[in-house]
Image (cartoon, rainbow, N blue to C red; front, top):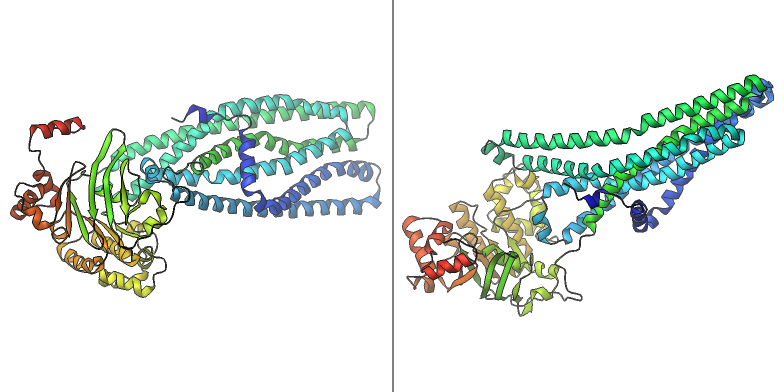
Length: 619
């Protein structure tokens, strides 16, 4: 349900939004809009001329039979319609060009702004719905300006000019015709009050609908695997039905203006003809002025009708534009400090100082974690799912800021340096490899834009990816499907590792980087990573023993706390330790680290169970 306060438009809000758009884009398009206004005024002037000239056509040519004026009047009419045609073409092309450029400009602006927002925004906002909302609403900026300009420069000027012709030709008939104005204005205001309450809701429902469709198609393999087709179809049917009801309501409300305007216009024209006919039959008045008046009245009907409906279009465009500005006005919650310096990495030592963190107030994840990842060495972090391993890497990348303590690189607090300089010094491989639109070569080059083709291929060789890449239809220039759907999970992971290798950063983060690989591929990648990790500070999150035993230091987490720390041999030396029990379980049963660490990390006392319950866990 949309917020009621957002479904109503303040009286001056349209003006305020238009003023903002003009202030942001006015200089760029000033000459374009000047040309469009000139064309629109020309259209209005030629429309008024068509009504004006009817008096001379009837009185001078048909009544007084002045043949000398035929050529002059015909040439004038041809010229007027030629000017009208060229002006219509000119304003259409200019406004289309400006509108398309505005859409492109705001699309780029929105994307750039989204890239500045913190991870928390994207955690709360579903990506499919966000994309659908942007695509639906970005045209509102263009339509708001285009509708306003057309309404003022063409329709309003045309209406004023035609009303002037009517008044000049016959003031009495003009008074009769203009009696429809007050009821028409009252009707428009009434309909707008009804329309405001449903327009925003319709936009939001359509965004949910398109977003849900996008997510269903992206996850079609899961849909089919769990036979979710009928379940999703029922959900989609409800959304579609709701969207249809809202759209029909908007159509009913907005289109009520048409029959009302038509009936009012019919009464006005009938009244004019009745009164003019009475004067002509009883007063002997020449018909030219009446014909000119009726022509002006008929021609004035279209701009008057468009002006009456313009607020309908403005209401819709305003909702679209306002929703775009709601995104653009979001301030990043995790900005750099004013004058923050760039991070300078010399050795690459990473120090976690009593780090505490919670994603929300009642969901703490880390409790005073304190350890050092020595420069040029490999530190492995192990623990059960939910222990906080991936959260540590997210904090190191400053996807989030710590709640307590600090993280330092070479003695520099990462919260005091720029995020860009921090992330430029880190190469990251996530447990869920993500590939972007483009070729395999493009996806590896995202690691470092300046990388040469030779460096890209060398990185692929180190990641054990070169062989399968060359087997693709176009090798490194093969287009990947959506998120690399045409590649296996292991292949996507090796491309992701190649992207990290080509970055050539002094700090390497591997978040279960080999979890998607088979044993043979994992062995090859581990050999390659051993070369890449040499001389670099490497932090490894792993579930497999093979990625832990060779680490220079192993940190064991349990429920957000550091419970053990040491080398593989020193941790095994404590037979009652969590890591030692895990090692025995894996050696005896061949289980993965996720299950083993859960079994090995059972609380040893009732006090430990009570402490966990106090933190919101279970006994």
